[in-house]
Length: 273
Picture (cartoon, rainbow, N blue to C red):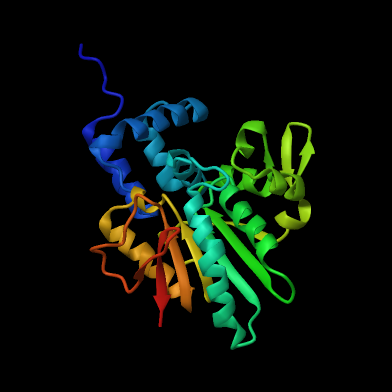
């Protein structure tokens, strides 16, 4: 009697279509093994007997579907990841935004960290803005992710010794407290960041953003989903604003209105209307 196939081609097609329709994340044959591995973990965790039975579960249970989508995302991040982006943010973008906003009397810089994972990116941005902005300037940071587990870690703001690599010593002493188990982001810094669940397939409802960071997220989407996500960013951003994507990602050839900007520190995109 032939051995039962754990994950057939038909199963793979059903799952990847569901994932794409629900999140925009695109699985190909190349990363099929990642999906299979995650499914094995979910079956062990839920004690459900087969991938077909689990498929029926997630199509009928929105909460389990959320947890499944959480499990298939990769959450690689660190503080001050891709330093040239933060150099450009500090030396070009923040001064430019201050010049733009002075004319209107608006003294608040609004930033969205989309796909924030476990929080290192928005906390990095917050530490930089604490250094760069003096009264009356203020900032607001919204940080979102599709992973509820990652958001819980981000809100807690507690990182072990291995996770704080990359934070300058002066910032470490100033913005984190040494606690049992590692370091915790200072309470007043954590209070300035709003962490929220968001699926990039949907409109965030955010408007008037000055900077959007969405780095190393678009690579999980196919071209159609990438374009849709980027155009939703456009809708959420202020008339003169800036977009960072991952260094291996590009908007070239995509039907968007963003302008490419190259500086001595890094490249990024600008909405200028």
